[in-house]
Length: 598
Image 1 (cartoon, rainbow, N blue to C red):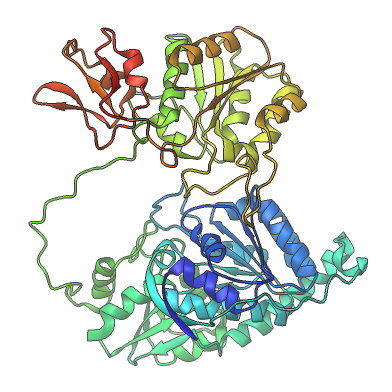
Image 2: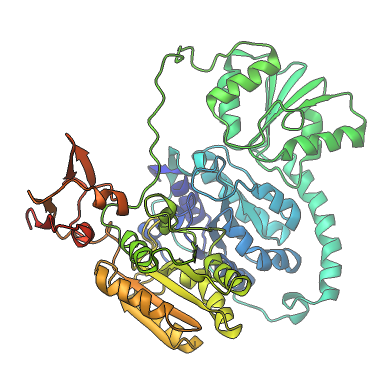
C-alpha cells in the first residue's frame, strides 16, 4: 500500500481507480477538472480516459460502458449536469449494469460559476441516490461505495463534492498499482436497453420501490453518523459538517447528525438520531434540502420538534458556509457567543478588491479591441459566452453585452438580429466552447437566415479550466496524437460563404477583417487565431521611449495589466509584459516598440 497527499479531486480519482473503474469521461469545469487530470497522471492499466466535447456526450459514452458491465465515471461541474440531464434522466429509468458514478461538483459561493445550483435537488428529481462527502478522505472511501451501490441497485448514482472538498488536501492510502476490472461485455436485450414508454412506466414504479430499499440501506451507512447527546441537534452534510464539528467540540451536550447520503433520505437513521430532541438546526449550504426532509418527517410521524434553518432565516439561502459562519449560526441556535477563533479581527483591514482580468498579452483582448475599433459608434450587439473571454466585459473594453450559458452567445445574437435588423450582431465564442455547444447554434443561424458575425476566439486550448485539450488541439487524454478537427472546415460544411482567419495581434488586418464581414449579408465568421499566452513562450518585452506624450491612450483603450502609471508616467511592468505588441499598434506617436531583450 502507498500513502499519498492529494487534493480532494485527486482523492476521488484514486478512489475510482481503487474501485477498478474502466472508463472515465467528462468535460472540464472548475471545481471538478483535476479528477480526470489526476487519473491521466497516475499509472494504470485497462482504463479508458477522455475529455468529451461536452457533458452530454460524456454521459452517453459512460452509459454504453456501463451497459457492457464496465465501471464508469463521468465528471463535470454542477451546470454541466444540466447539459447531461437528458441522458441521465433516461438512464435512471433504464438502469445500469456496471457501476456508473456521475461526479457533479457543486460550487457554493459561487466561486467560479454562473449559478449555485444544488445537485442534491437533481438527485431527487432524477430519483437516483446521491453521496455527499465532507472531506477528501471521506470522498476517497465514499466514491468506492458509490460504485458498489450503483451495481447493487442497478442505478446511476450522483457524487456531489463541493469546492472546499474538491480543493482541500489530505492523505489517503491506496494500492501500489491500479487496473480496470474484467468486463463481461454488452449482452443484447432490447426489452431492457431500448427505452420505450411502456418500459419507462414499468421502471418508474420499480424506481420508487427501489428507493425505499435504498433509504433503509442508507440508514445503516457508515458515513451517516450521530455524535453527542442532548435535546438540541444540528443536522448537516458535506463540508458544513466539518465546520459544525469544529465548533461543537466545546458543546458535547448537542447532537451532531451527519448525512453522507442525503437522497434517498435515510428516514430510520434520522428518526433514531432525533429521538429525545426538541429543537434541531439544519446547517447546510445552498437549498434547504435536509431541512425540508426533516419537516416532512415531522408531518409524517407527528413529531413534536422545532426546526430551524433556511426557511426561518437562521441560515442564509446563498453562499458557502465557513468556520466563522458556523460559529455565528450554531452559536445563535445554542444561545452561545461566537467562539470561532477566539481572535479579535475587528481592526483587520479589508482585503484589496482584485477583479479578474484578461492576462497581459492575451489575444482575446486584441480580438475584442479590433471589433470595437472597427465598429466605432455603429449600433452593435456583443454576445459573449463562457470562458476567459467573458472578461471582455470589463472596462475599458466593455465588449460583452450578454453572457448566459455555454454556446448561448451564438444563438442570442440571432435573437437580437431577428428583433432589431438595424444593429450588427456579434457572437464571441472560444474554440473549446465552439466544439462543446456552438456548432448547432451556427447551423441554426444559417438555416434561419440570420445576419450576424461569428467571432471564434481560437487560442488552441481550454484555458479557463486548466488548458485541457479539445478536438482542435490534435491530442487526446489517452496520449495519442490525432487529426485536428478544423473549425474552418466545419463552418464551410455548415454553409458559411465568408470565413476569415486572422491573427488578432495584427490590429490592422483584424480591423479590416471585421469591416469586410460586417459589409456582407448572412452569417460570416472571423477566426481570431493566436495561442494562449499562458502556454506559449513570451516574445520578449515592450518598451516606452522618450517620444511618449503621456496621453494614456494605451491604458485607456485596452486595459492591459502590464501598462501602469509610475510617478506620473506610463510604464510597462516587465514582470507582466509578454511582448504581444498590441499597445505599440495603438500608440498615436509610436512611443512603444521593440523588445527590451529577446
